[in-house]
Image (cartoon, one colour):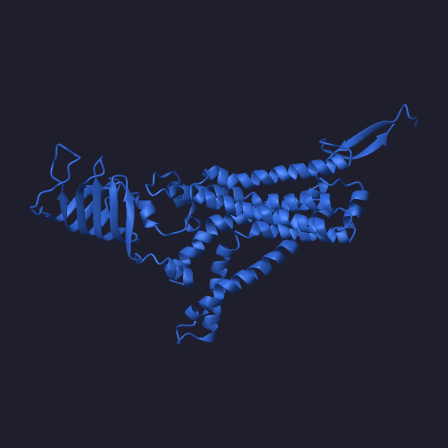
Length: 407
């Protein structure tokens, strides 16, 4: 073979998801991820449950095994609420832990010297992300609302008492398209309003009608509400809307036993007033995300829905990010500065997710931006890192394996 006949070629990358090394790395990733999850949940559950022990032991007739069972059961229910926000970051830490082990034990050098490319080594990270992403979507979108529903229904634990739907929590003020509503809410079902007062204004912002009732309930599919046991007042007609009513004579309030009035109020939203968006079922969340809610809370529902869709990809992206950064910054030996930098990159990604979701809930950014901007930034970071790895190996943007010489 002479220099004239030598030809530099590279083999195409073929992923091996079921290969022995992929299975070995996947098992290592999952083992370390679950260890991180166990540590984080031990801390989180201890902080969450310790103040509630007095609630679980308040009944003197309850036996010791009953108290233990109550604690275990509440821990399982609270796990569905505490784990979802932390699982993507736990995935990052678990994969990073595995990569540190691979570097310090020289396993990565051994595998790369055998001809396996860095991109092929990312297959287990993808597999771990797919498994955990599916688990996160199911837990956060379905198990979390179901768990909080059990706590509310049984008035079980601190959250069950705080979100008790059998009491109104005092008088509520609700904005309407043409006025204001003041009432005590019986969430039901069925939904009812007690000690209700409805203020309606005209187009110029002047008070035109006041309805009070001891009880108000919505009429099905009509946009009307049935008021019972109250009275109403209407402003007299006035050709000049700029003039206020200055009659010294007291104006009469007309009593009624029952009266139907139109009310621009979303019944589904009102029946879930006070419930955080993350505790709503997918069906309710989708409906409220499209609803026209005067109070502006639709942004929170839309953001929550986008967050649910995007977080199914977050564990995979965080897993990919940890593996790619580790392969780039400490492939053969562990450097403390590089390790700290990689850890901070993962924490920054976790913080950015939370920050954008909060901005979306308060309406500062559109819901799709709040839900998807961080995954997009992570994808860009992964792409840049993989490009640097391939560039170091002389392959630039080519998705190819280790170059070889063939005659």
